[in-house]
Length: 386
Image (cartoon, rainbow, N blue to C red; front, side):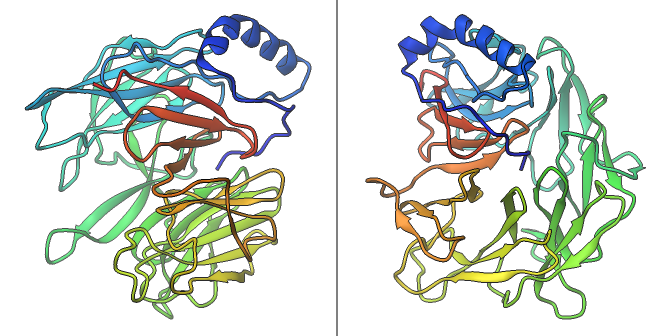
């Protein structure tokens, strides 16, 4: 997760008002930024873009990229949209991706490595995949590979970790052993971290704050799911062991604001087979993950029973979880939750970008929201839905 900023109050505006005031808002934002005042991000809608938006990512300066899929009965055309810094509208860039069949589906992933720089991974199985990199806002792309070339001692600023499977399981359907990689923001070449976390099994990136990097794996001594924490951008790691993690846990996810961290336990719920993205427990830490308090545990039939993406640890001290049965909010450090508004059903998926939290709807309708503090959100629409 990116650093949480203290924001001036902001409201979500309608598309018509947003378009009318875009230039004025951008100029006001630039003045506020020069004065040292953080403002909520203002992202234009792009309902004139062809197809449906399937992935979005942003740089810290508010510029970004989106992957679009324009599908007919048999084939999908994959497109790239670009938002330049301070621009009033998204524009179509060149797309390096070939058409795919509807049956094959969209498997490409998108990572923004900085202003005007994006890395697309085609997403075939098993890896490694082909990659495509642009450093000029999608005007030109260079082909590369997801296979790492050498090592690096440190995680570059603004870049997240990536899992690299080095050995498949016996069935060939999953990963038995992996390592963590990073990508160069200038060349997009993948490199393995020279010092790998001392955890067994698949190493899965578990989240980042401004000062800390987390990887999930299994403790070699106990076999339980645990965390490796780096305070120096991957140069060294220490073990962090939330208590009570069982065999049903898939991997831990960490989010936080200020000195408060939360570690979520996604996994298979006992006796609740109708829940696909189960949430087993939540842990809270106020000492950079050295110790954890188990603040919440699953109870049959009690929501939130599932977790879609990343919990939102907001600047106002609240913790919000998007689930298969609506949005749930805690104001007591994750110990209890109440339903947020009239939410119900699949409530969208939350990820993090260099700009902040990103929410996308669960049904591919092109609705998105972005927030730098988890409190104030900007809504935008991308694609015409075809």
